[in-house]
Amino acid sequence: MAELIDKTVTFFKKEIVFCISLILAIVSCFFVEPSSNYFHYINWQTIILLFVIMVIVEILKNLSVFEILIRKLVTRTANTRNLVLVLVFACFFSSIFITNDVSLIIFVPFAILALKKVEKTNLIIFTVCLQTIAANVGCMVLPIGAPHNIVMYTVSNISFTSFFLLLLPYIIVSMLFLAILLFFIPNNDIVLPELSKIEINRKNFFKRILFGVDYYLLLTFIALFILIGNLENIAFFKSFFTKWIVGNEVLCGVISSQIISNVPAAMLLSGFSTNYEAIIVGINIGGFGTLIASMANLISYKILVREFDDFKIKYLIVFTVLNVILLIIFFGVYIFAPN
Image (cartoon, rainbow, N blue to C red):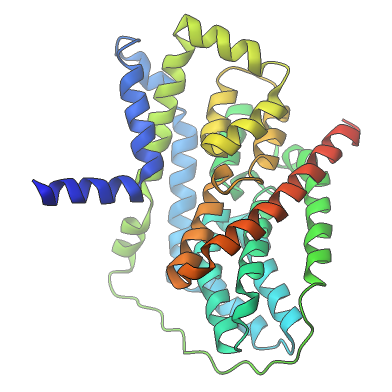
């Protein structure tokens, strides 16, 4: 019995978003009688698109495509600033195509390894913070760059071009912000040691791809779709959310992202408002701020503290300060930029 409890607790900690989503979806079923309408709640286009993207990402990971490219760039760097620049913008460009979460899973460990090898561990906290920001910015470029944008893309039917132009002012400001921060990195010479050879394991290639897909993320989406669908059919919640969300989509997107992260926020807001452009802006800039505002933020944090547990408090301080500053800048852009 004790072993079962331990396994349950471990699973809950590992898949906390899925578990909470599932519990809330089940609770909501007591207020709306289960029926075939539940299947209509689920945006299957989003589920299928997300699954296809995850399969493609797993193929790229197993072929070490991006790691090969980043190593070629890193071995050509001669100083600490250029090294950090390459590590940060690797997250930006890769997150455009393989999502911000996967970009950080690949490149945060690589950055820690590279900085340890050149004996620059004092730069790890700052570098990982910048990598996380860069990944959250890069995922704004295309709708396929993050799960919350995949949701909004399939719900709104906004074109790739319109999506990009909508978020372009925030992307430009973020790039300038990152460029300024990089000047705080010392411009010291380094000698990067030879990195271990990359070996591509072709054994059970397709099996590893299928098992590498995050099925709990897909189930999380399904649970959230059912939850939001049920809330739309409960008069009290429908009235409450409609009253506060409609007309305040950007602010609600930012605030709700800080509390429940921007993926559930996207699904919640899109269930009660059709002002999709405002929701897209709100949930994307809402990914900056607290550690839980985006799942990508939690991923880089977990990777870092697994390697350096004593960096935990300092990282949280640096991360929060940088993200809150950028979030305030985003609000300025939103207020003063022409719509």
